[in-house]
Length: 178
Image (cartoon, rainbow, N blue to C red; front, top):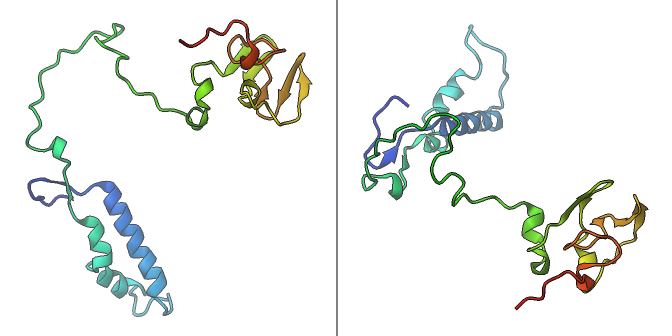
């Protein structure tokens, strides 16, 4: 880590050292078949360990990695930024921030993406069943909880108005798409 590295390459990172160490000990465990008892006050693995420190299977993890082109010499010099006092939001805070989608949001049917699929109305609190709100309907068996039908996927309430008794397909307050 203390050595100079070539231009266009980053220094060796801690993760690389950890991977090299892990590889060295894995190879040592696989290849050392002799006893682990020390002989003449020398640990049994000394010779094998020393030989593996220069082995290409280990040293390949310690090579400098090329720097990404965006971070290279073509990057503009950092401009001086005056810190904003605490408590005041920075200009543009929250704009253009990409929010990671959950696995459920990625798998959500296109017909339901515009609706809030979590209900929170007093005693009814939890996910809304997607199948119930689609034209095909929900094939799962239901139980009644807090006066509302529920299957293993969620409450059988409308995805639009969150009222029980009807689905999105028959909801009267849904605005037709133009």
